[in-house]
Image (tube, rainbow over all chains, first blue to last red; front, side, top):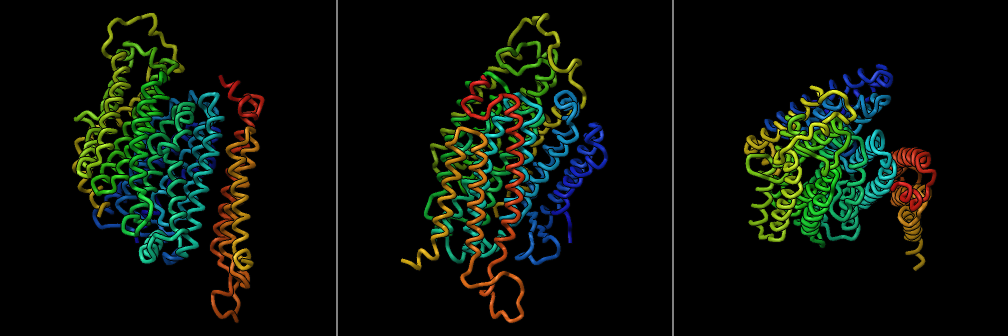
Length: 495
Length: 120
């Protein structure tokens, strides 16, 4: 029996506990080394897991040798293996990048910070891999607690206040999810996802307790996913946090909650076949469409790069929600491909913003000038590539996921969705091109202004460069490999 | 009527706790009162699970040699789940309180309008 499903999250737990045991709380270097090493092991294991699943199908693993109806089951199927790979890969690159920035931003607390980062990744992987509804709640809360810590230290002075608001809302979301699980448990008598799915399929969904339970679970997770009306916490929290905190959480935090929605709606509940009285897909799709336009509009009006990217995250989550709302195999493929694309390009953009902050000491778009393209040639290039990908121009990854979503919207005659996607692409172009214009299309280098006023005296360190460039290159790799990814990794999910 | 009350009164009481918790979390201006509202809200959910596991006339879920069927025991699963939920709740409250300490040191107040004013 293969132990891969349990080893993937366990590697991070061991790493997180090893840091204090090896004295990493005192010496940041040790913590950094352990963090990078163990997250590399995590990437290796999740890659092996992904290949194995592609080759020979889902792996089910029951902890402690119980039967699956009693014990906690971990499931590595195409969907969870894909999600786990995205989480491990992106977090590895960000941890690789973090060394120099953490030295400046959190000189005294690097060890504990990395330890909590590893706990966060473990929580996210646990959510992806678990096959048990209550276990999912526990991992959801582990993730949230780690997020509150990571987002509140090292950043802006206002961070604790915005994180406190997020904590209240996040706890509300998790509690709603738990309440929903309670209804499902009392109705079906089991927590295992496969058994719940079977039980609900035979009893039908048109019973008050089941309807209430499903709605509460979805609403609870939607708070964490930041779907349109529930996104209020996100912009403040992301823009006040430290650069590493945002770069780590923004690409994967909300995506894993989106994964939970996909898991619940397509693998556990199946509202369409079960006769669910509320058109839940349509509601999610429309909220996604509103979120896309709203997030893009708000992003256009921001003057701070980090805050602009935070609002654009609201819009990008909307794309994933829209793909879920379409509820066809192609729509889900679009949503999942967009999850991967957005994780890659949003991480790249946040690392770029951290690079800019380290050199200039601000991320105010109005003060961006052409000296950036001279001083940070590769960073500017990475920014240009990921900005084009966010807009969705053809040679980059962003185009392909949007293409799937557009195609499905046309096939399903959802013209409003189509308008939302096209409109937001135009708005994306507006808010990214005004930065590209300042970076590339203006002449005249004011030499006296290019003096290093940033928090880091020397130029960008190699370790920071590597992280940014891996993600920048990743955008092209995904773009050229998108047929392979769709056929081999995403197609099996929809069967 | 009496029978309905007998089986459903507890849920009505839980609903009241639930609403009190929500009220505290969203309508109180003091951040500490928000945390108190949050704990009340979580207690309501814990009580909901425990009440759902209750079977009238059944005994504690400890193995008895002469028990005829599983209906003679209460369902132990929700109880164990709630032990975990209590631990999660304690961790959340602890973190919330530590955030409040930081906020109080920086802004000298726990009243939300006051903090927002000083954040400008």
